Length: 226
Length: 296
Image (cartoon, rainbow over all chains, first blue to last red; front, side, top):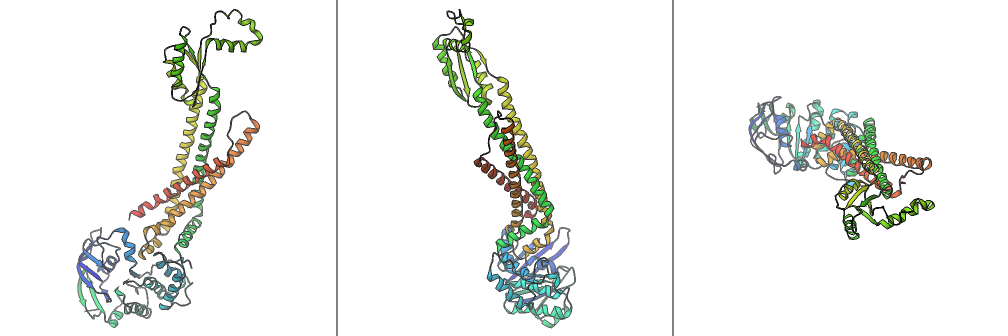
Protein backbone atom coordinates (compact mmCIF):
# COMPACT_ATOMS: atom_id res chain seq x y z
CA UNK A 1 0.00 0.00 0.00
CA UNK A 2 2.87 2.34 0.88
CA UNK A 3 6.47 2.01 -0.25
CA UNK A 4 9.38 4.38 0.37
CA UNK A 5 12.62 3.67 -1.40
CA UNK A 6 15.80 5.59 -0.49
CA UNK A 7 13.71 8.65 0.29
CA UNK A 8 15.53 11.82 1.36
CA UNK A 9 13.97 15.19 1.94
CA UNK A 10 16.00 18.39 2.13
CA UNK A 11 14.05 21.60 2.77
CA UNK A 12 14.94 24.86 1.06
CA UNK A 13 16.90 26.08 4.07
CA UNK A 14 19.18 23.06 3.65
CA UNK A 15 17.67 21.14 6.55
CA UNK A 16 17.88 17.37 6.05
CA UNK A 17 14.51 16.12 7.33
CA UNK A 18 14.65 12.55 6.05
CA UNK A 19 17.78 10.62 5.14
CA UNK A 20 17.48 7.60 2.79
CA UNK A 21 14.36 6.12 4.38
CA UNK A 22 13.20 2.70 3.20
CA UNK A 23 9.94 1.21 4.37
CA UNK A 24 7.02 -0.82 3.22
CA UNK A 25 3.52 -0.80 4.72
CA UNK A 26 1.03 -3.38 3.55
CA UNK A 27 -2.69 -3.05 3.08
CA UNK A 28 -4.61 -3.15 6.36
CA UNK A 29 -1.61 -2.48 8.60
CA UNK A 30 -1.71 -0.16 11.63
CA UNK A 31 1.60 1.66 12.02
CA UNK A 32 2.81 4.07 14.71
CA UNK A 33 5.60 6.46 13.76
CA UNK A 34 7.42 7.62 16.89
CA UNK A 35 10.47 9.67 17.67
CA UNK A 36 11.49 12.99 19.21
CA UNK A 37 10.14 16.29 17.92
CA UNK A 38 11.91 17.36 14.74
CA UNK A 39 12.96 13.79 13.89
CA UNK A 40 11.06 13.88 10.58
CA UNK A 41 7.72 12.26 11.50
CA UNK A 42 5.63 15.08 10.07
CA UNK A 43 7.72 15.20 6.91
CA UNK A 44 7.16 11.49 6.44
CA UNK A 45 3.38 11.95 6.74
CA UNK A 46 3.46 14.96 4.38
CA UNK A 47 5.29 12.90 1.78
CA UNK A 48 2.54 10.27 1.97
CA UNK A 49 -0.28 12.64 1.01
CA UNK A 50 1.92 14.56 -1.40
CA UNK A 51 2.03 17.79 0.51
CA UNK A 52 5.77 17.53 -0.02
CA UNK A 53 7.77 15.78 -2.72
CA UNK A 54 10.95 13.85 -1.92
CA UNK A 55 14.28 15.41 -2.86
CA UNK A 56 15.51 11.95 -3.71
CA UNK A 57 14.04 8.47 -3.83
CA UNK A 58 10.62 7.09 -4.64
CA UNK A 59 7.31 7.25 -2.74
CA UNK A 60 4.51 4.98 -3.93
CA UNK A 61 1.12 5.28 -2.21
CA UNK A 62 -1.99 3.29 -3.19
CA UNK A 63 -0.41 2.49 -6.54
CA UNK A 64 0.59 6.09 -7.34
CA UNK A 65 4.22 7.13 -7.76
CA UNK A 66 3.98 10.51 -6.03
CA UNK A 67 7.24 11.82 -7.49
CA UNK A 68 5.99 11.65 -11.08
CA UNK A 69 2.34 12.44 -10.33
CA UNK A 70 1.00 15.37 -12.36
CA UNK A 71 -0.44 18.36 -10.53
CA UNK A 72 -3.88 17.71 -11.94
CA UNK A 73 -3.94 14.20 -10.51
CA UNK A 74 -3.24 15.24 -6.92
CA UNK A 75 -6.88 15.97 -5.93
CA UNK A 76 -8.01 12.55 -7.19
CA UNK A 77 -5.17 10.86 -5.35
CA UNK A 78 -6.06 12.69 -2.11
CA UNK A 79 -9.64 11.44 -2.31
CA UNK A 80 -8.28 7.96 -1.57
CA UNK A 81 -6.65 9.19 1.62
CA UNK A 82 -7.93 10.64 4.87
CA UNK A 83 -5.70 12.96 6.88
CA UNK A 84 -6.11 14.05 10.50
CA UNK A 85 -4.02 16.72 12.25
CA UNK A 86 -3.18 17.87 15.73
CA UNK A 87 -4.99 21.18 15.10
CA UNK A 88 -8.08 19.52 13.52
CA UNK A 89 -8.17 21.88 10.50
CA UNK A 90 -11.93 22.42 10.55
CA UNK A 91 -13.85 25.23 8.88
CA UNK A 92 -15.09 27.39 11.73
CA UNK A 93 -17.90 29.07 9.84
CA UNK A 94 -19.53 25.74 9.04
CA UNK A 95 -21.48 23.32 11.17
CA UNK A 96 -20.31 19.82 12.09
CA UNK A 97 -22.46 18.32 9.33
CA UNK A 98 -21.23 20.83 6.75
CA UNK A 99 -17.60 20.20 7.65
CA UNK A 100 -18.05 16.49 7.11
CA UNK A 101 -20.18 16.91 3.97
CA UNK A 102 -17.47 19.14 2.51
CA UNK A 103 -15.28 16.13 1.75
CA UNK A 104 -18.10 14.61 -0.28
CA UNK A 105 -19.22 17.79 -2.02
CA UNK A 106 -15.76 18.51 -3.43
CA UNK A 107 -15.94 15.18 -5.23
CA UNK A 108 -19.18 16.24 -6.90
CA UNK A 109 -21.51 14.21 -4.68
CA UNK A 110 -24.86 15.87 -3.98
CA UNK A 111 -28.29 15.55 -2.50
CA UNK A 112 -29.91 13.17 -0.08
CA UNK A 113 -27.15 10.59 -0.34
CA UNK A 114 -24.72 13.11 1.13
CA UNK A 115 -27.06 13.91 4.02
CA UNK A 116 -27.59 10.24 4.77
CA UNK A 117 -23.89 9.35 4.76
CA UNK A 118 -23.00 12.40 6.85
CA UNK A 119 -25.59 11.59 9.52
CA UNK A 120 -24.41 7.99 9.58
CA UNK A 121 -20.80 9.07 10.04
CA UNK A 122 -21.78 11.54 12.77
CA UNK A 123 -23.26 8.71 14.79
CA UNK A 124 -20.22 6.48 14.11
CA UNK A 125 -17.89 9.06 15.67
CA UNK A 126 -20.29 9.59 18.57
CA UNK A 127 -21.53 13.10 17.79
CA UNK A 128 -25.22 12.31 17.36
CA UNK A 129 -27.29 15.42 18.05
CA UNK A 130 -24.31 17.74 17.52
CA UNK A 131 -24.62 17.97 13.71
CA UNK A 132 -25.71 21.63 13.75
CA UNK A 133 -23.11 22.82 16.27
CA UNK A 134 -20.19 24.96 15.13
CA UNK A 135 -16.64 23.74 15.82
CA UNK A 136 -15.92 26.34 18.49
CA UNK A 137 -18.96 25.16 20.44
CA UNK A 138 -17.24 21.77 20.72
CA UNK A 139 -14.49 20.43 22.96
CA UNK A 140 -11.12 19.51 21.46
CA UNK A 141 -11.98 15.83 21.50
CA UNK A 142 -15.27 16.47 19.75
CA UNK A 143 -13.55 18.61 17.13
CA UNK A 144 -11.10 15.82 16.43
CA UNK A 145 -14.05 13.44 16.01
CA UNK A 146 -15.42 15.77 13.34
CA UNK A 147 -12.03 15.76 11.61
CA UNK A 148 -11.92 11.95 11.75
CA UNK A 149 -15.46 11.74 10.39
CA UNK A 150 -14.43 14.01 7.51
CA UNK A 151 -11.34 11.88 6.86
CA UNK A 152 -13.31 8.63 6.88
CA UNK A 153 -16.50 9.60 5.07
CA UNK A 154 -15.12 8.59 1.68
CA UNK A 155 -13.95 5.20 2.99
CA UNK A 156 -10.29 5.99 2.30
CA UNK A 157 -7.74 3.31 1.56
CA UNK A 158 -5.33 5.01 3.92
CA UNK A 159 -5.81 7.11 7.06
CA UNK A 160 -2.87 9.34 7.95
CA UNK A 161 -2.73 11.10 11.32
CA UNK A 162 -0.10 13.59 12.44
CA UNK A 163 -0.18 13.74 16.27
CA UNK A 164 -3.98 13.50 16.33
CA UNK A 165 -4.10 13.65 20.14
CA UNK A 166 -1.36 16.22 20.70
CA UNK A 167 -3.87 18.70 22.14
CA UNK A 168 -6.06 16.22 24.03
CA UNK A 169 -6.08 14.73 27.54
CA UNK A 170 -5.25 11.01 28.00
CA UNK A 171 -8.85 9.82 28.34
CA UNK A 172 -10.00 11.69 25.22
CA UNK A 173 -6.89 10.51 23.39
CA UNK A 174 -7.82 6.93 24.07
CA UNK A 175 -11.30 7.47 22.63
CA UNK A 176 -9.84 9.04 19.49
CA UNK A 177 -7.48 6.08 19.03
CA UNK A 178 -10.40 3.70 19.47
CA UNK A 179 -12.08 5.42 16.53
CA UNK A 180 -8.94 5.20 14.43
CA UNK A 181 -8.53 1.54 15.33
CA UNK A 182 -12.10 0.91 14.34
CA UNK A 183 -11.41 2.30 10.85
CA UNK A 184 -8.42 -0.05 10.69
CA UNK A 185 -10.54 -3.03 11.63
CA UNK A 186 -12.79 -2.22 8.66
CA UNK A 187 -9.75 -2.42 6.38
CA UNK A 188 -8.24 1.06 6.21
CA UNK A 189 -4.46 1.17 6.35
CA UNK A 190 -3.45 3.51 9.20
CA UNK A 191 -0.25 5.49 9.75
CA UNK A 192 -0.13 7.61 12.91
CA UNK A 193 2.72 9.85 14.00
CA UNK A 194 2.38 10.28 17.76
CA UNK A 195 3.95 11.04 21.12
CA UNK A 196 1.19 9.22 23.04
CA UNK A 197 3.43 6.71 24.83
CA UNK A 198 0.75 4.97 26.90
CA UNK A 199 -1.41 4.33 23.84
CA UNK A 200 1.42 2.97 21.71
CA UNK A 201 2.39 0.72 24.61
CA UNK A 202 -1.14 -0.54 25.17
CA UNK A 203 -2.07 -1.16 21.51
CA UNK A 204 1.05 -3.18 20.55
CA UNK A 205 1.03 -2.38 16.86
CA UNK A 206 3.90 -2.01 14.42
CA UNK A 207 6.18 0.80 15.59
CA UNK A 208 8.63 2.66 13.35
CA UNK A 209 11.02 4.91 15.23
CA UNK A 210 12.69 7.84 13.48
CA UNK A 211 15.67 9.78 14.79
CA UNK A 212 17.34 12.65 12.89
CA UNK A 213 15.60 11.65 9.68
CA UNK A 214 16.55 7.98 9.75
CA UNK A 215 14.55 4.86 10.62
CA UNK A 216 16.30 3.44 13.70
CA UNK A 217 13.73 0.80 14.66
CA UNK A 218 10.87 -1.11 13.02
CA UNK A 219 9.14 -3.55 15.45
CA UNK A 220 6.23 -5.74 14.41
CA UNK A 221 4.55 -5.49 17.84
CA UNK A 222 6.45 -2.66 19.39
CA UNK A 223 6.35 -0.33 22.34
CA UNK A 224 7.00 3.42 22.46
CA UNK A 225 10.50 2.82 23.77
CA UNK A 226 12.87 0.12 22.64
CA UNK B 1 -26.95 21.96 5.02
CA UNK B 2 -25.87 22.65 1.47
CA UNK B 3 -25.32 19.36 -0.28
CA UNK B 4 -24.64 20.25 -3.91
CA UNK B 5 -21.83 21.69 -5.95
CA UNK B 6 -23.99 24.39 -7.53
CA UNK B 7 -25.29 25.37 -4.10
CA UNK B 8 -21.73 25.45 -2.86
CA UNK B 9 -20.53 27.68 -5.73
CA UNK B 10 -23.42 30.15 -5.48
CA UNK B 11 -23.32 30.20 -1.69
CA UNK B 12 -19.59 30.92 -1.62
CA UNK B 13 -19.94 33.64 -4.27
CA UNK B 14 -22.77 35.34 -2.40
CA UNK B 15 -20.88 35.14 0.88
CA UNK B 16 -17.67 36.55 -0.53
CA UNK B 17 -19.47 39.52 -2.12
CA UNK B 18 -21.49 40.23 1.02
CA UNK B 19 -18.56 39.92 3.40
CA UNK B 20 -16.51 42.41 1.38
CA UNK B 21 -19.32 44.86 0.78
CA UNK B 22 -17.09 47.91 0.47
CA UNK B 23 -14.57 46.49 -1.96
CA UNK B 24 -17.37 44.80 -3.91
CA UNK B 25 -19.10 48.15 -4.21
CA UNK B 26 -15.86 49.78 -5.30
CA UNK B 27 -15.30 47.06 -7.90
CA UNK B 28 -18.82 47.45 -9.23
CA UNK B 29 -18.48 51.23 -9.28
CA UNK B 30 -15.25 51.35 -11.26
CA UNK B 31 -16.50 48.70 -13.68
CA UNK B 32 -19.68 50.71 -14.09
CA UNK B 33 -17.66 53.86 -14.81
CA UNK B 34 -15.48 52.06 -17.35
CA UNK B 35 -18.48 50.55 -19.06
CA UNK B 36 -20.31 53.89 -18.96
CA UNK B 37 -17.39 55.37 -20.90
CA UNK B 38 -17.58 52.44 -23.30
CA UNK B 39 -21.26 53.25 -23.75
CA UNK B 40 -20.41 56.90 -24.39
CA UNK B 41 -17.86 55.85 -27.02
CA UNK B 42 -20.47 53.59 -28.55
CA UNK B 43 -23.03 56.42 -28.71
CA UNK B 44 -20.52 58.93 -30.08
CA UNK B 45 -19.55 56.44 -32.74
CA UNK B 46 -23.18 55.88 -33.64
CA UNK B 47 -23.89 59.60 -33.90
CA UNK B 48 -20.78 60.38 -35.88
CA UNK B 49 -21.84 57.80 -38.41
CA UNK B 50 -25.23 59.41 -38.56
CA UNK B 51 -23.78 62.91 -38.84
CA UNK B 52 -21.41 61.84 -41.60
CA UNK B 53 -24.37 60.56 -43.53
CA UNK B 54 -26.23 63.83 -43.09
CA UNK B 55 -23.31 66.12 -43.83
CA UNK B 56 -21.98 64.03 -46.66
CA UNK B 57 -25.12 64.65 -48.65
CA UNK B 58 -24.38 68.33 -48.43
CA UNK B 59 -20.78 67.92 -49.38
CA UNK B 60 -20.07 67.75 -53.05
CA UNK B 61 -16.75 67.92 -54.81
CA UNK B 62 -16.86 70.29 -57.78
CA UNK B 63 -14.37 69.36 -60.48
CA UNK B 64 -13.95 72.14 -63.11
CA UNK B 65 -12.64 70.96 -66.43
CA UNK B 66 -10.31 72.63 -68.93
CA UNK B 67 -12.40 74.71 -71.39
CA UNK B 68 -10.28 73.75 -74.39
CA UNK B 69 -11.04 70.02 -74.31
CA UNK B 70 -13.44 68.00 -76.46
CA UNK B 71 -16.58 66.27 -75.23
CA UNK B 72 -14.75 62.93 -75.62
CA UNK B 73 -12.04 64.08 -73.25
CA UNK B 74 -14.68 65.21 -70.78
CA UNK B 75 -16.29 61.76 -70.95
CA UNK B 76 -12.89 60.16 -70.26
CA UNK B 77 -12.42 62.30 -67.14
CA UNK B 78 -15.94 61.47 -66.04
CA UNK B 79 -15.18 57.74 -66.33
CA UNK B 80 -11.85 58.10 -64.51
CA UNK B 81 -13.52 59.87 -61.58
CA UNK B 82 -16.34 57.36 -61.47
CA UNK B 83 -13.83 54.51 -61.19
CA UNK B 84 -12.21 55.98 -58.06
CA UNK B 85 -12.66 54.11 -54.78
CA UNK B 86 -15.27 55.48 -52.39
CA UNK B 87 -17.13 57.47 -55.05
CA UNK B 88 -20.87 57.20 -54.56
CA UNK B 89 -22.26 59.32 -57.33
CA UNK B 90 -20.86 61.32 -60.26
CA UNK B 91 -22.73 63.87 -62.36
CA UNK B 92 -21.45 65.51 -65.52
CA UNK B 93 -22.47 69.17 -66.01
CA UNK B 94 -21.75 70.46 -69.54
CA UNK B 95 -21.06 74.14 -70.35
CA UNK B 96 -24.65 74.49 -71.56
CA UNK B 97 -26.05 72.84 -68.40
CA UNK B 98 -24.01 75.20 -66.27
CA UNK B 99 -25.41 78.19 -68.11
CA UNK B 100 -28.93 76.88 -67.70
CA UNK B 101 -28.37 76.52 -63.96
CA UNK B 102 -27.02 80.03 -63.79
CA UNK B 103 -30.00 81.38 -65.68
CA UNK B 104 -32.27 79.50 -63.35
CA UNK B 105 -30.57 81.13 -60.37
CA UNK B 106 -30.87 84.61 -61.79
CA UNK B 107 -34.32 84.15 -63.27
CA UNK B 108 -35.53 87.48 -61.96
CA UNK B 109 -32.53 89.34 -63.21
CA UNK B 110 -32.08 87.77 -66.61
CA UNK B 111 -30.66 91.02 -67.89
CA UNK B 112 -27.46 90.44 -66.00
CA UNK B 113 -26.77 87.48 -68.19
CA UNK B 114 -27.58 89.15 -71.47
CA UNK B 115 -24.82 88.97 -73.98
CA UNK B 116 -23.49 85.73 -72.60
CA UNK B 117 -25.62 83.67 -74.92
CA UNK B 118 -23.10 83.65 -77.77
CA UNK B 119 -19.93 83.20 -75.80
CA UNK B 120 -20.53 80.91 -72.80
CA UNK B 121 -17.67 81.54 -70.31
CA UNK B 122 -18.67 78.79 -67.90
CA UNK B 123 -16.53 75.63 -67.67
CA UNK B 124 -17.92 72.13 -67.86
CA UNK B 125 -17.69 70.30 -64.54
CA UNK B 126 -18.09 66.97 -62.79
CA UNK B 127 -19.85 66.78 -59.41
CA UNK B 128 -18.81 63.97 -57.08
CA UNK B 129 -20.48 62.60 -53.97
CA UNK B 130 -18.48 60.31 -51.70
CA UNK B 131 -19.51 57.32 -49.67
CA UNK B 132 -17.52 58.62 -46.67
CA UNK B 133 -16.65 62.20 -45.84
CA UNK B 134 -13.31 61.08 -44.45
CA UNK B 135 -12.21 60.06 -47.94
CA UNK B 136 -12.78 63.46 -49.51
CA UNK B 137 -9.28 64.97 -49.09
CA UNK B 138 -7.62 61.90 -50.61
CA UNK B 139 -10.02 61.75 -53.50
CA UNK B 140 -9.60 65.45 -54.20
CA UNK B 141 -5.84 65.03 -54.34
CA UNK B 142 -6.26 62.16 -56.79
CA UNK B 143 -8.69 64.07 -59.01
CA UNK B 144 -6.30 67.02 -59.20
CA UNK B 145 -3.77 64.69 -60.83
CA UNK B 146 -6.07 63.87 -63.74
CA UNK B 147 -4.95 65.78 -66.88
CA UNK B 148 -7.62 68.17 -68.11
CA UNK B 149 -8.87 69.00 -64.62
CA UNK B 150 -8.63 72.73 -64.15
CA UNK B 151 -9.67 73.23 -60.56
CA UNK B 152 -11.25 71.27 -57.71
CA UNK B 153 -13.43 72.87 -55.08
CA UNK B 154 -14.94 71.38 -51.97
CA UNK B 155 -15.65 72.32 -48.41
CA UNK B 156 -12.22 71.26 -47.29
CA UNK B 157 -12.53 72.64 -43.81
CA UNK B 158 -15.82 71.01 -42.98
CA UNK B 159 -14.82 67.63 -44.31
CA UNK B 160 -11.48 67.38 -42.58
CA UNK B 161 -12.85 68.83 -39.36
CA UNK B 162 -15.66 66.36 -39.21
CA UNK B 163 -13.27 63.52 -39.93
CA UNK B 164 -10.77 64.59 -37.29
CA UNK B 165 -13.51 65.38 -34.77
CA UNK B 166 -14.70 61.84 -35.21
CA UNK B 167 -11.25 60.38 -34.77
CA UNK B 168 -10.42 62.50 -31.74
CA UNK B 169 -13.66 61.99 -29.85
CA UNK B 170 -13.56 58.27 -30.50
CA UNK B 171 -9.93 58.04 -29.41
CA UNK B 172 -10.62 60.06 -26.26
CA UNK B 173 -13.63 58.02 -25.19
CA UNK B 174 -11.97 54.69 -26.04
CA UNK B 175 -8.75 55.78 -24.32
CA UNK B 176 -10.71 56.83 -21.24
CA UNK B 177 -12.50 53.53 -21.29
CA UNK B 178 -9.22 51.61 -21.54
CA UNK B 179 -7.74 53.49 -18.58
CA UNK B 180 -10.81 53.16 -16.38
CA UNK B 181 -11.21 49.55 -17.56
CA UNK B 182 -7.68 48.76 -16.39
CA UNK B 183 -8.44 50.42 -13.06
CA UNK B 184 -11.62 48.34 -12.80
CA UNK B 185 -9.66 45.14 -13.47
CA UNK B 186 -7.16 46.12 -10.79
CA UNK B 187 -9.87 46.99 -8.26
CA UNK B 188 -11.71 43.70 -8.87
CA UNK B 189 -8.49 41.74 -8.67
CA UNK B 190 -7.59 43.46 -5.42
CA UNK B 191 -11.03 42.81 -3.97
CA UNK B 192 -10.75 39.13 -4.82
CA UNK B 193 -7.19 38.94 -3.53
CA UNK B 194 -8.46 40.10 -0.14
CA UNK B 195 -10.96 37.25 -0.14
CA UNK B 196 -8.33 34.74 -1.23
CA UNK B 197 -6.04 35.88 1.58
CA UNK B 198 -8.85 35.63 4.12
CA UNK B 199 -9.57 32.11 2.92
CA UNK B 200 -6.03 30.68 2.91
CA UNK B 201 -6.96 28.28 5.71
CA UNK B 202 -10.09 27.14 3.93
CA UNK B 203 -8.26 26.71 0.60
CA UNK B 204 -5.63 24.54 2.32
CA UNK B 205 -8.39 22.34 3.75
CA UNK B 206 -10.12 22.08 0.38
CA UNK B 207 -6.88 20.91 -1.21
CA UNK B 208 -6.43 18.44 1.61
CA UNK B 209 -9.79 16.79 1.05
CA UNK B 210 -9.14 16.53 -2.68
CA UNK B 211 -10.86 19.55 -4.22
CA UNK B 212 -9.73 20.24 -7.77
CA UNK B 213 -8.25 23.62 -8.67
CA UNK B 214 -11.36 24.40 -10.73
CA UNK B 215 -13.58 23.93 -7.70
CA UNK B 216 -11.34 26.04 -5.49
CA UNK B 217 -11.03 28.82 -8.03
CA UNK B 218 -14.64 28.63 -9.25
CA UNK B 219 -16.27 30.83 -6.59
CA UNK B 220 -13.59 33.51 -7.04
CA UNK B 221 -14.03 33.65 -10.81
CA UNK B 222 -17.80 33.68 -10.38
CA UNK B 223 -17.44 36.54 -7.89
CA UNK B 224 -15.43 38.47 -10.48
CA UNK B 225 -18.05 37.80 -13.15
CA UNK B 226 -20.92 38.87 -10.89
CA UNK B 227 -19.09 42.10 -9.98
CA UNK B 228 -18.34 42.77 -13.67
CA UNK B 229 -21.91 42.11 -14.78
CA UNK B 230 -23.38 44.24 -11.97
CA UNK B 231 -21.00 47.02 -13.02
CA UNK B 232 -22.12 46.49 -16.60
CA UNK B 233 -25.79 46.82 -15.68
CA UNK B 234 -25.17 50.05 -13.75
CA UNK B 235 -22.89 51.50 -16.42
CA UNK B 236 -25.26 50.63 -19.25
CA UNK B 237 -28.31 52.00 -17.43
CA UNK B 238 -26.43 55.20 -16.73
CA UNK B 239 -25.28 55.59 -20.34
CA UNK B 240 -28.66 54.73 -21.86
CA UNK B 241 -30.57 56.89 -19.38
CA UNK B 242 -28.26 59.87 -19.87
CA UNK B 243 -28.40 59.53 -23.63
CA UNK B 244 -32.19 59.43 -23.78
CA UNK B 245 -32.22 62.60 -21.69
CA UNK B 246 -29.66 64.28 -24.00
CA UNK B 247 -31.66 63.31 -27.10
CA UNK B 248 -34.95 64.64 -25.76
CA UNK B 249 -33.30 67.87 -24.57
CA UNK B 250 -31.54 68.51 -27.88
CA UNK B 251 -34.61 67.71 -29.93
CA UNK B 252 -36.52 70.24 -27.88
CA UNK B 253 -33.95 73.04 -27.74
CA UNK B 254 -31.96 72.55 -30.96
CA UNK B 255 -34.26 70.71 -33.34
CA UNK B 256 -31.93 71.26 -36.33
CA UNK B 257 -28.99 69.33 -34.79
CA UNK B 258 -28.86 65.85 -36.25
CA UNK B 259 -28.96 63.36 -33.37
CA UNK B 260 -29.80 59.71 -33.47
CA UNK B 261 -32.70 58.38 -31.45
CA UNK B 262 -31.74 55.37 -29.38
CA UNK B 263 -33.85 52.53 -30.70
CA UNK B 264 -34.57 49.42 -28.67
CA UNK B 265 -32.32 47.37 -30.97
CA UNK B 266 -29.40 49.74 -30.45
CA UNK B 267 -29.95 49.76 -26.71
CA UNK B 268 -29.96 45.95 -26.68
CA UNK B 269 -26.80 45.83 -28.81
CA UNK B 270 -25.19 48.24 -26.41
CA UNK B 271 -26.26 46.22 -23.39
CA UNK B 272 -24.84 43.03 -24.90
CA UNK B 273 -21.50 44.68 -25.71
CA UNK B 274 -21.28 46.26 -22.26
CA UNK B 275 -22.30 43.18 -20.27
CA UNK B 276 -19.89 40.95 -22.13
CA UNK B 277 -17.16 43.52 -21.54
CA UNK B 278 -18.19 43.42 -17.87
CA UNK B 279 -17.74 39.63 -17.89
CA UNK B 280 -14.30 39.98 -19.51
CA UNK B 281 -13.28 42.61 -16.93
CA UNK B 282 -14.50 40.36 -14.10
CA UNK B 283 -12.74 37.25 -15.40
CA UNK B 284 -9.49 39.14 -15.99
CA UNK B 285 -9.67 40.76 -12.56
CA UNK B 286 -10.21 37.50 -10.72
CA UNK B 287 -7.74 35.51 -12.83
CA UNK B 288 -4.98 38.04 -12.16
CA UNK B 289 -5.46 37.71 -8.41
CA UNK B 290 -5.50 33.90 -8.61
CA UNK B 291 -2.56 33.59 -10.98
CA UNK B 292 0.00 33.38 -8.25
CA UNK B 293 -2.12 30.91 -6.36
CA UNK B 294 -2.72 28.74 -9.45
CA UNK B 295 0.97 28.42 -10.14
CA UNK B 296 1.65 26.80 -6.73
